[in-house]
Image (cartoon, rainbow, N blue to C red; front, top):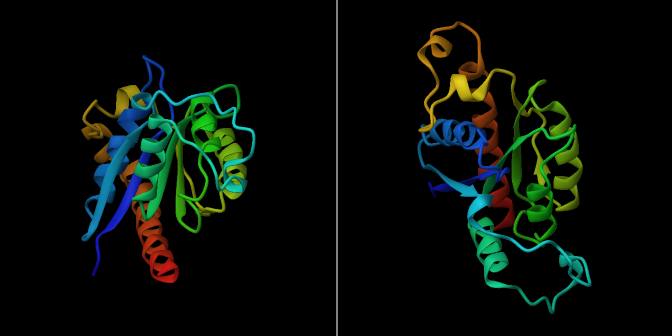
Length: 196
């Protein structure tokens, strides 16, 4: 069985962000599955330009890419599936995440995307926005998002470890994530086989 590669995208670049903690925790859960590898992709490390191309990326076969954009797209292209981890800003997603996704042409096409969010209501409105954007990229948005309703900064440490007081509970995010990650891997394998 071939190894499935999942890119876990950190969709915020604020200095005070807690999104990396949630992303690292999700990546750890993914890597507990046999023959699956998770790679963290942090938008703060790319310094992407604001999208100002004359044509939409999917309609521009003569596209000229800068080095940062090229690296971003190559990193996406290696993945068989994705987790987009986003905070909710003003009932939407961060501008840096929308801009990064606007730069994508076919790297996410026919690949599954698990939406993961956090915020005052679990980031549910960010998920609504992301579903629309992901559809425009011709990717497959999975039915059940992971909406983290707790306080990420208090519940997850900087290495992506969930606090013992959370894992000792009968219900909680550590239970909700399992079926979502399993579904992502199932879709990743199925769509990878179909693309081949």
